[in-house]
Image 1 (spheres, rainbow, N blue to C red):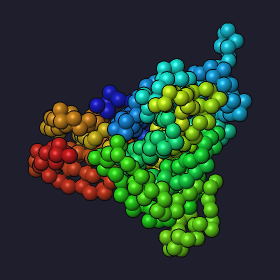
Image 2: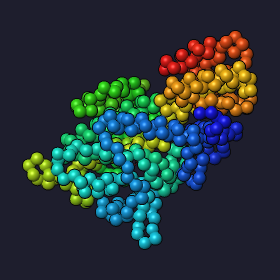
Image 3: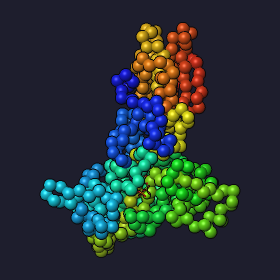
Length: 440
Ligand code: ATP
Ligand code: MG
C-alpha cells in the first residue's frame, strides 16, 4: 500500500477524551473514529488489525474442531422470552420495534438463537459433540462506554457454543476451548491468564475469564505469579485426546481468580512473595452451563438407548475488538504502538526520505515491489512530508520493521533497517536488508 493512496489521519495532539493509552494511541494513529458513544468506525489501519486478530481467533477455533457460521445481529424478542432472559437482561439490551410492531433486539449474545438452530436440526447423539461459532457484532447498551474499544456498545465478539450428550462430554468440550484460548492469545503476543470467574447473566456452573494483566484493566484480580511462566500448548496439541493435564496445570496448579470469586483464605496458601494483586482486562470467557437453556427451550437428543435427554451446553466468548486495546496496553512505548508481528497492520514500512530524488525513488519502488511480491505487505511512505514527521508516524503506527531509504545512505549503497520493538537501527546494503526481511 502506498501511503499517498491510503487514509491515515494521524493526530499530532493527544485527544483529550481518551483516558487510557490504548485509546489515545488508536485515535492518534488514525485507526478509529467515534461515531456515537461506544460506537466506532474502523478506519483502514484499525480495520487491518481487527481482521488479523479475527483470523487468528478463527484459525484456533477451527483447529480445536469448532465450525464457523454466521447468525444475524437482530433477533426476535420471542426467542428470548422462551429462555426467560428477555425481561431478565435489563437495560443493556437494545430493543427495537419494526414497522409491523414486531419486537426485535440487537443481539448482546447468541445462546437462544444457536439453541433454536440446533433444536431444529439435531435429533440424535450421533451428531455430538458439536461446536458452532460465529464472529459477529454485538450490542450492549453499556451504562458507561469508555476506553475506546475496551468497553464499546457495539463490539465484535467471537462466540462459540458447544452441545454434548452429557456432563462428561461437555467438560471435554470446555477443555478444548480452554486450550484453544491459551493458544489464541499467545499467538497475538499476549499473556492471558485463565482465572476462576463468576458466571453472570450467561449463567451456569463453571467459568474462567482469560485476563491480560494491565494497570488500566477494569477487573481486580488475584493470582500466583508462577502462572505467568506456564508453557503454552503448541500447534501439535491433540484436541481429540485428553486435555485434562493442560487444563489442570493452567486452571488448578496456581491460584488465579477474579475479585467476584476471590477467596482470601485460599490465596494465603500461596507463598507471600508469589502473590500478585493487580488489575486486568477480560479478553475472553468460557462457560459450562449444562442444561440451563436446554430445559426451558426443550432441546433434547436421543441417547444410544433411544431415550431423549436434554443436551449439555457451554458458551465461549472472545472480545475480538477489545483485543486491539489489550494488545496496545501490553505493547507500546512513548513514541507509539509496537505491534506484535502476528497482528501488525503491515509487515514493514518503507520510508522514502527524499521523494523526487530519482535514485531514492527507484530504490524505494524496487524495495516496495519486491517486499510486496514476497507477501510482506509493505506500507510505502511516498508522501512529501519531512523526514521527522515520517519517522514519528512510523513509530506511532508501530509496524514491526522500518526500511529507511535516503540519498546519503544510497551514495554508499546502504539503507537503514529499524526494528520497532527494540529501536535498533542498522545500516546495510539494500539487498541484504531485503533478504533479511524476506527471510522472516
Ligand atoms: P465485561 O465483564 O467486561 O462487561 P462480560 O463478562 O459481560 O464482559 P461476556 O459476555 O463474557 O462479557 O463476553 C465475551 C467477551 O466479549 C468478553 O470476555 C469481552 O472480551 C468482550 N466484551 C464484553 N463486553 C464488551 C464491551 N462492552 N466492549 C468490548 N468488548 C466486550
Ligand atoms: Mg465475561
